[in-house]
Length: 351
Ligand SMILES: *Cc1c(COP(=O)(O)O)cnc(C)c1O
Image (tube, rainbow, N blue to C red):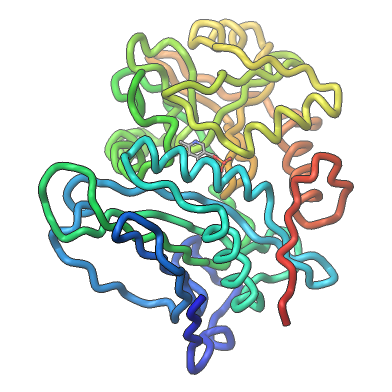
């Protein structure tokens, strides 16, 4: 792997106390080109702007997919990832759906390991601190014909992050807009899925709601995801989350919460849940919690919701599952608890 290091690191001039999520990047990035029908040798270079032809398809047809992961540092300065094989598999699933070439496992893991070793000083110890990892693939071929490109770039960039706090979150349940449809790309981490969410989310913000709970495009009756997270509902002491489908992203946090629920004898049902059932449960006082699950926030409690003329504020409880799962997941991620499913992946130090 060709490695060009920075002449001077930005580390000492970076204020880790005032980090805004996803705005500060480390010294280096990884770039791997796809041309002549195959992925070439990856390269690590100083983080910086790219020169890409304006006709590249990524700009015109949105042929782009990405992943979101985190690196954590334990008390002995060891750096850990959380279930990175899942991110690797999902990146290729997303790429295939967007007619992009799949990435070899070695490019992903050797690239990640080498890059993280170079920039490991950017991973800060202490709960809440992490290094957000953004792998992505874009169509870079300079040609605007509407067909899959012949050239791509796979890249990894790294951004130091503090505990993610989204403020108080109340949600609007979607009655008009959709983020995904049957046969569509909702299950893929495709860039365009996010662009499509911005406008309806802005409308929700104007009404005083921070996020949208997405419903199925046909009937707007089935509860599917919350913003860019999977969503869980606690009715009495049973946790419910929708099964994955074409329309629902197969979240790693989601599947980890399901496993932890089973490990801890919390009743979990993976099944469809409707707006009608939610409102009934709320009216009877059976709705105890709603929370989102995703890498950035880990678990994000939702305090209330609105659907049509019905608004509901969930009464506060002391034994929230949201707190329980966040703690359990963090303890595994920071190497503070037993890892019985082998979810942790050590970035072995090469220096
Ligand atoms: C990334 C993402 C999630 C969460 O997935 P994790 O693997 O838990 O980070 C959920 N829903 C959508 C739409 C996403 O893009």
